[in-house]
Structure formats: structure tokens, C-alpha cells
Image 1 (cartoon, helix red, strand yellow):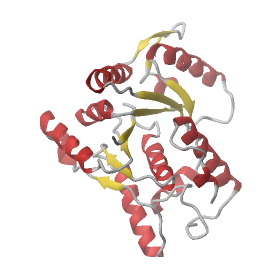
Image 2 (cartoon, one colour):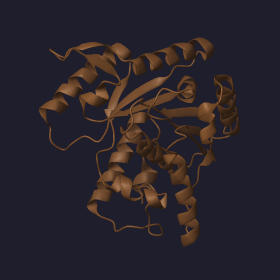
Image 3 (spheres, helix red, strand yellow):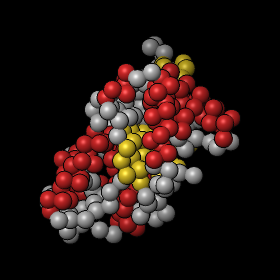
Image 4 (cartoon, helix red, strand yellow):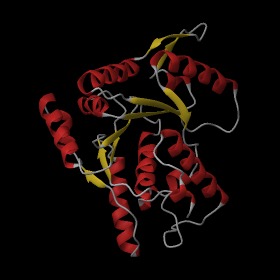
Length: 269
């Protein structure tokens, strides 16, 4: 069966699309057949990235692995729920020949997003170093900052995991990534980390390292490329030690998620 990776968080600006793009390209360079679904039909960042990739490679006579992409038009957001689910099922069927499918979701609760979460084998939730982002996962007491309860999104993931276990006897692995961490170990960061760890024990997710707030992760987007693509023949920007550090960061992330055996493909270029 094709494994499905859903990058989800019901808050915008957490870095979902950036993370989905980098996971997708890293998996492509691992040699897998990778499918891509962009459920953020308004922004379509993942779809634009794939379009940019095809155009840049064609213009420069370069070669790099491409995903198999299934697209939705914006009209699906207004479609009846049954129709939206049927179209999503058809998209997964189209991509059934892939080894893995990466799904980027919108920063909102939608029919498509909930349905995709229910199909996931791995849910990856990025969050910024902020109580604003933590509020998507859990609610804290405004006086003591103690954890009061999981949020609606956490309940959505919990219900998806429960339904998946009942319907197919397969479990959903949920990972929360501390994304865009600031270099300084600020007091706020420690406070957020304590609440994330407490919630992880209650909600049943793993906490892992995300991607730091590096310009490198954003500057290659117009070319449809990531640090996993850079090589002697593909180099639209000047290389620096920051690129080396970013590659190692992505390699560590892939290893933590269990998506690569040794990261050799990422490190070799």
C-alpha cells in the first residue's frame, strides 16, 4: 500500500508548504516514486513549486526527479462534501502506483483536509516557537500557563487515528516539529517546549526537530528547487556553509521521520 504523509496544521504561517516541498524533493532523491497533492486550493504553493521546477529544468536543460502531481481547482472548495471526498479518493487512486504521497493542507478545517488526515500513515505538524502556534494544539491557563486541554485540531487528529485503527488496523504516526526555531534559547522557547512535551504525552505525538528560519529554504522556491537538488549541474545560487548546514538539517529531519535509511543521497552532493 502507498504510504501517505500529510503535512497539517489548522493555522497559516507555520511552514507547512515549505516543509511539504522539502520532504517531497528529499524523497524524490531517495529514489522513490513520489506523488503530490496540494489541498490548499487557494494558495497552491506546492503546485506552483512543481510548475516552477518543470519550467526551470526545461529552460536549463537540466534533469532532476519529478513528482506525480494531482491538482484540484478552487471550485472544489464549494463542492458538496460527498463530491469533494469522491474526488479526493479518485486522486489517491491515481497516485496509487507511487511509493509515497505527500499532501499539503490548508491552514483551516476543510472537508478535504479532514479526509486526508484520515488517510494518513504519518501526520507531520510544524509549529513556530510561539504560544500563538501552540494554541492550535493545546489550550493553556492564562494565569499559570499550565496545559488545560488539547485543541480542536488535536481532537481532529485523535479522531482520525481512532477511525483509521478501526477501519484498517493501521496506526497513524503523529509528529510535531518545532519549526523555525530562533538561535537563542529564550525563556519563551523553554516555556513553549515544556507545554509541547506535556501535551505530547497526553495527545500521543512525537516531538522532533523542524527546519530553522533560513533564507536558504525560501530562496530556491522560484526555481522549483530545494537544497536536496543542488549539484554541480544544478546551482542557481552561490553555495555557502549555510547550504551545507541546511542540508544536514534536512537529513536529520528525514532520519527522525524514518523516511531515509542513512541520508546518503542528500549528503553526497
